[in-house]
Length: 320
Ligand code: ADP
View 1: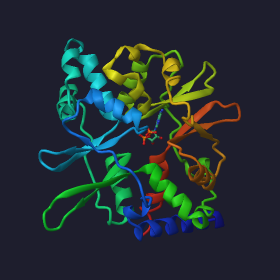
View 2: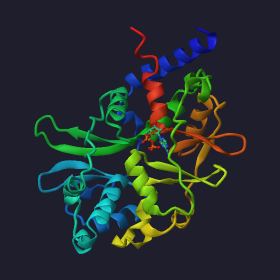
View 3: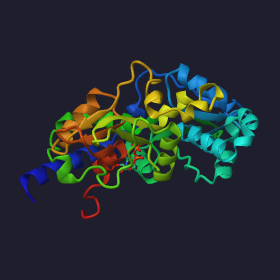
View 4: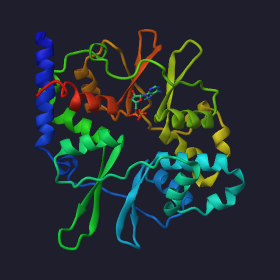
């Protein structure tokens, strides 16, 4: 192996060792707020709660049984929209749905429920990461269980971004060893990319995200130049107040509804090195990187799960 390979391997090993001696607790800031939603809330109302608090997901609590009941994300709203598309006559019923109805909605539209996994905050972070990759969950709730009473407490939620940022901030001496380029390590997806144009509708985008099981669609012009990206969370403002008319709007119109401070998209080139991706993660709240060429034409997509997977399991198979 070349010296570059060797250094890369050392860097990855050091990061993995770091994740094995840190816990999910370590990722949490000293003080933070946590918004937990009751299963009895009307789904319609939860949209406003998320928007008003500038969040895109929240843990759900079953207060009747005193138990953690899962995590509400953009996927749940997309399920609601699919329900609306499949059963358009039931719009009045839709208005009355509560969070506790989400499982019934999943069943009605035939969606495979996302496994509700949680981890104990004092387990190794490495374990939480592996769980995330295995279940394809983009966020994982930290649930503490009282030894004596068996009572559950939701402590917080950690996301793929939080973990990667934690690695980036605390491992600069290790991430600098990751000098191989995106192209060399084949990071991300480059074939059969799901894309759309500005004049496609929000519903088109939702159907594509569901079909392809992805949460982001790059928006390109006629020359395949990247203009923006439509994300699953962009759906939330489109249905606020329980109105579904805006789903027929164009993606261009929907993107205008993003909050003024929304950061937009992050791009990189295939010749960028993994350490520079970590620099971006350290500095900005990235959700994914869109890979472009010198003409800003779309080449690929690197999701945070692609990065996490590489950092955690690359080369694992062939080492004893
Ligand atoms: P995201 O949350 O960005 O959708 P996921 O973790 O769901 O990312 O991505 C799953 C896989 O799908 C990843 O390997 C990613 O590279 C790929 N992917 C993401 N977006 C697209 C897209 N628009 N077209 C094709 N593949 C994609």
